[in-house]
Amino acid sequence: MGKHFWLKESFLFGLKVDYLSPAFYFQDLLILILIFLEIGQSFVLKGNIKKISISFKVFKKYINDKFAVITKNKLKLWFYFLTIVFIVLNIVFSKAPRISLYWWIRIFEFFLLGVVIKRNLKKAFKILFICLPLILFFEFFLGFFQALKSSSLGGFFWFFGERSFNILTPGIARGSFLGKVFLRPYATFSHPNSLAGFTLVCLVLLLGKEEKNYFDKIALILGIALIVLSFSRAAWLSLTLVFFFFFVFRLFSFVKKKENPFSYSYFLALIASFPLFYLFTRTTIDSSSFEIRIKLAESALRLIKANPLFGVGAGNFVIGLSESNQIWQWLYWLQPVHNIFLLLFSELGLIFGVLFPYFYFRTFFNLFKDLSKFQRQKLTLAAGLLSVALTGLFDHYWLTLIQNQLLLTTLLSFSIFNKENLSFK
Image (cartoon, rainbow, N blue to C red; front, side, top):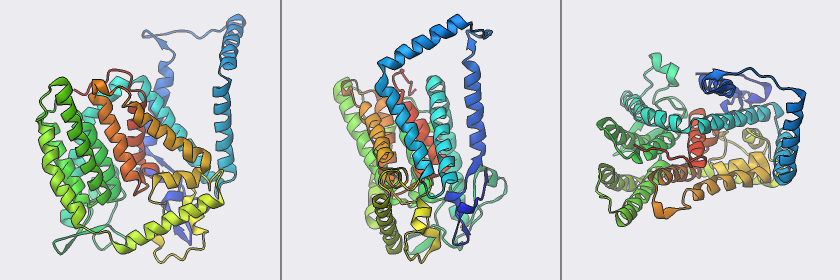
């Protein structure tokens, strides 16, 4: 549920382009409520609201203390200052400054959401594991009946994000198996690939749970089935690699801690790996789809070469693409490049294009600092980050679509602030 605002810059060749339309979602309202509640709680000490009264003397001491800290951390101060400068320049020199400003506001919103998660880490983690199986159940059954009916179900599912479509809708994603064409499930997402990537990370996190009840076990099976139905080759390959990652972990866990490796999750991963790998090797990529993805990558490289320092502006890739004198036979392929790293480089320029991946993979490798303990929660979070990176090599949804953005923000928050003893039980 979202309200789209159609600016002049949101139209290309007379058509509305979703990626260029600033939108305010129902999720944004919930995030703002969380942020304001957190700000309110910052004035609460031991359950009692205290009066705020700062004398000139106290204020002067506060300023002096802060100044002393600043002088000791000039490098950090310069980093923050230069970050703000580059953000401003990215907006000013973008193809469409208003759209770029909107995307930076959204990035700041996700940053504040990460702060809220950090301050409520254990509670957020507990809530997540209550939600995961419910999400997998809901998305599977909605997606399954869409594929069975060859159309959307309609009705109140529209409020959850289901779009109106059928198997004959132009540009709709279809799969082919045993000579039969079928509708790939969308569930509440805008594309089956986005659904598959989201489901993949949910599966990884649930797989890491130590004590699974029957509801969790069934949800894992349904999640794997949904990824199979989605016909997302990137998700198939990523899930197979994650299962291999899981096998290695269980093996080392057995050697180090003498834990029994033959658990429900172990057998499920083992059984599911073979059909996933078989499907990946037996299906082929549509030649036109592959060709246009290559063209998008080539266009991204041209945009990077033409705008190396500040990029074309956050959220402005499609505008830069439309100005590249490329003859497009299918206008619905006017969309971001299907690689999150190329997308970052082309939109944000060299500085942020390097900093964001560095920050991401530094977070990933920090989870492996003390492998001798084989902490389940850290390895599970690392597998989640690996899943995002692998699927992000072949699509853009982690940076452009609201559900995937929220899950990535949550996953990164847990991964960065994992110093607490997060319970996977």
